[in-house]
Length: 257
Image 1 (cartoon, helix red, strand yellow):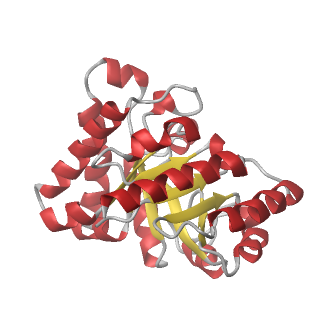
Image 2 (tube, one colour):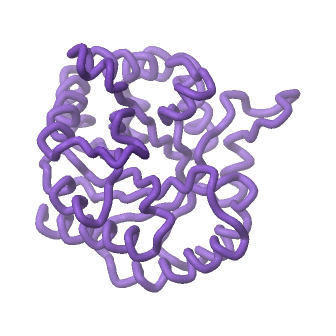
């Protein structure tokens, strides 16, 4: 059985005071929820603070990006080894904001995926289409291209130690959400494409939905057979919202047993 995972992406938000308040509220709220797994991916400057605040809790720490190089003259970059030293378990790679705003190519994302795994981090690989691509009927082609770049660089077996997050770009930060059926369709496509090469790997791979997940729609999304949790943006900054989403994941996970 695939254990549900809910990962919060704080993006470029937070402060020492607000981080402390948020984590202090989340740790006890999530403590009784034993049926799923939880993580928060925080800005680099706050890794040390949040690592200390999460110590001894069931919430894992993650980063929002990782450099494709392991070290050297790359001013402004952060390596996977550095993230691991701060207790990170996850690293997001290929988020649509990195692809769209900062020009990251499929090939660069694949190199970051490989770098994360070299440092024993679990990459959360983001894939997804823009509104124009969806309306043009090329959603599956776009997602396949993004997946294939990673497989070409790292091999199919590398996906076994990763998480894939489907995030329709048109539903990120817009308040729009793919219907559960739309999310399920793309998740099923992803799992089916991987199953074409390795059915066992595909069956065990966790696929998250990312795109304006809220407490109000989480349970319905997580009830879909191929949706194994969520990559949560804005709602991850609210202890009440994120806690409710995690509760929905735990309840759905228990029902799937």
